[in-house]
Image (cartoon, rainbow, N blue to C red; front, side, top):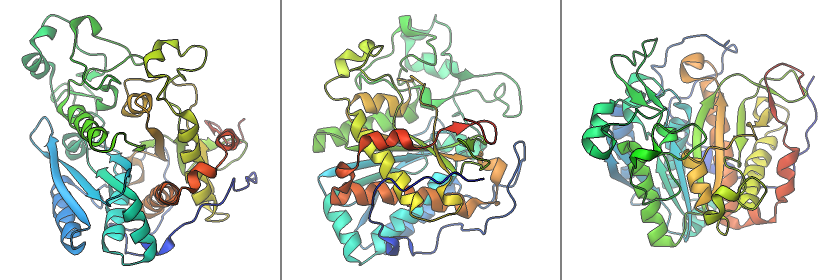
Length: 398
C-alpha cells in the first residue's frame, strides 16, 4: 500500500524541453530481480557517445560546445559538454562507475533538448545558467561494464614515485571474480577525491579508508577536479554539482513500493555541527541548506508526475561520511550537491525499465535546472528535505 506523500512545494517544469525523442528509449518491461544479468547493448558506448555529442553540437547551432577535458588511463577522451552563458554554474557528472549508464542517456537527452529548443523557457535557462556535463567520466570502466577504471598500482607509483613503498590504496580492486580485476585491476574512482583541490599524494595517507580523503591518483578524478577548479576560477564558484549513479533494490520507507530513485544532499558530517570539527577549514563555505533545497526541488518535480512509479523517490543513506567522494569534496568546497541513485545496476535492468529510469533522471535534473534558473529553489524550505521518505531494505519497513 502506497503511503501518500504530499508535494512539498511548487517547481515549474518546462515540459516542452523534454519533448525531443529520448536517446535509446524503451518501453518499461517486467520489474527485474536482483541478480538478473541482462543485455546492455541498447545503452550508449564510448564510440557512440562521441558521435552523438558531435550531432548534438552541430544541431544546436552554437548552443552546445563539446571539448576534451582530459583522458582516461587507457587514453579515451573525457568529454566536457557546455551549454548556456549565465553566471550560475551547474556541473553534472555521469558514469564515474562504468556500469551505471542511465545518467549518460539522460544527459544526452537534456543537452539535445536545451541545445535545439527555441522556447522561451530554454532561452531563460541558457541566459541564467552555465551547464557543464561530463557524460561518461569513467569511459574505460564503461567499456568493461564494471565499476572501477582500468589502471594498475604500478602505473600509480610510476606517476607518483613517493608511493613506491606503501600499500596500494584501499579502493584498488585486484582480486579475481566476475569483473576480472585480477587480469585488469582498477580503482573505484569515486573514492579518489579530496576537498583540497591542490592536494598532492603523500605516502603517509595510504592505504587510507572509505571515510577518509582520497588522493587524485587517477586521471579520471584529476580531470573532473581540473574542470571544477577551472569553473571556480572563471565564475567564482560552482553553484551546483550533481552526480548520477545506480544502486541496489531498496523500498520506499513505510510502503511495499520499490524505489525508482534515491536522492541525497548529505555526504559528509556538517562542519558546523558536533562531529564535523575535522572539516572546520571548510565550515564557512559549506551550504547544507542549499543542498537540501536542491533535493527538495528534485523530489517536487517527480511528485508532480502524479501517482506513478515516478513518485517512488526516497532519501539515500543519511549516515554516511565520505569526504573522498566527488560529492563530499565538492560540498566542502561550497557547492550545493545532489546524488541521484536509480535502482539496479545497468546489467540488472538492461532494456527493461530503461526508458522509465532515464525519464526519472531527466525530470529530476530539470527540477534542479528550472529551480536554479528562476531562483525558486531558494524559496523552498530546506527542512522539507527531512520529510522525504528514507530507503529501506524490506517492503513495508520503517
